[in-house]
Amino acid sequence: GDKAFSEAYFMTYAGRNQDGQEVIDVFAGRYVDRWERRNGRWGVVLRETVHEWSRGDVAGRTPFPIPPSEEGSFAQPIRGRGDISFTR
Image (cartoon, rainbow, N blue to C red):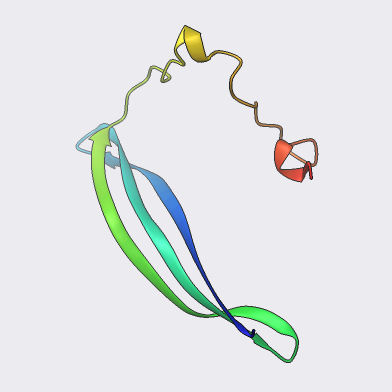
């Protein structure tokens, strides 16, 4: 066919200063897209953005700890073509 549908989740983080404190705003949602093939090329013809939730919190300075039971369970990020996303 020449039509397809997809859904992708996203989270956006933005920092700001509020009354001398660093605040992190988080916006989470979904893109619900309708795709069409025209002249042999696929493209998004309609995108709906769904707001799931959002919040703003004073930023902490301590990194979120990975539980010892989960250490080694996650791939580490690599900037560039060495990243796992390039492995097919």
